[in-house]
Length: 327
Length: 125
Image (tube, rainbow over the protein chains, first blue to last red):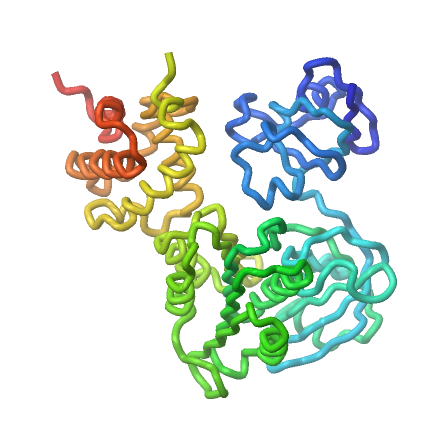
């Protein structure tokens, strides 16, 4: 009979027992409601071992890829290592490099220990005094020296508790990284799917990760990247994007800024550009879209894409919300 | 005896139907405004629950939950005309997906049977 390892404890499953029953039998309190595989309250994550398809019905594709499953209907056929969903690991990190492009800090952090993430996910960055902010990962797993590095894009906000510090912290400064989190990552196994990556501001960070991961995996389908900023000076990643487009004929880059002038940059709102790009895709049902950045733009673009014929479950969104001081 | 849900293709059919249905709803001036500002993924999950229920599939919707769930919309003017529109769009969706007319009629009847719950009123005599 297979076993489940939870929190370091190995729990044997009785014949026909579900993961939920086995965990409850071992004194683990897993939240539940319907116990029928519908409400998803009992979802947990398998970090090792695969689960039967029946235990993932109704879950999004990214969640399935991450090993999330419904414990109340899971009768595993192999050993599983299970933990709560979105638990994340805490890893020490330190500042390796910092480049400023306009208002954006492009940071490289060295990791004290390996972090198992997918390009496009995000982490929570924690300072010694526990100030915490989420940032998306722009780099790919395995990149960098030692145990690995993360590239983050941080908008330097005047008076920003974390960003002011990051703008001035000495190279080598210590931090903690918790994660990874998020469902905006490249889904492999669909090399011909048309991809649409659209974002505003530092929403480019996860999109850059997803783009580079797609290319690393030999993605063949057309990839359209749309980056928008309020002013042309905010298109901090344009050179990089254009270099990738020059090397890969299936990549098209569209840059938009509402004010300021720059070569090849249009002044149309992102939502209009997203809609036009979607309409140019012949096989819309197979397309996958990733939307990251300003919440209003993300919401409107998602609606545009759905109405234009993209499947809702193939539209992945990551809205970036600024931190707020407590009331 | 198979439920209509199973006859028309079960969950896979629901996934196709709900996308088509939700697009129609958001494009229809009569009812689209009730969905402004709503989280689209959560709404779609509810629409899927509704479609599953009216086709006799496994569901967790009850008359009470239809009543409670629509009360805030009744306060905003939800009326028979809107319910008519939704049932019409439901029929169009099922027709586009190739569901037979007699099954569509049966499904519409189930939708009709929750009209009073949706509009939070006592059943008419």
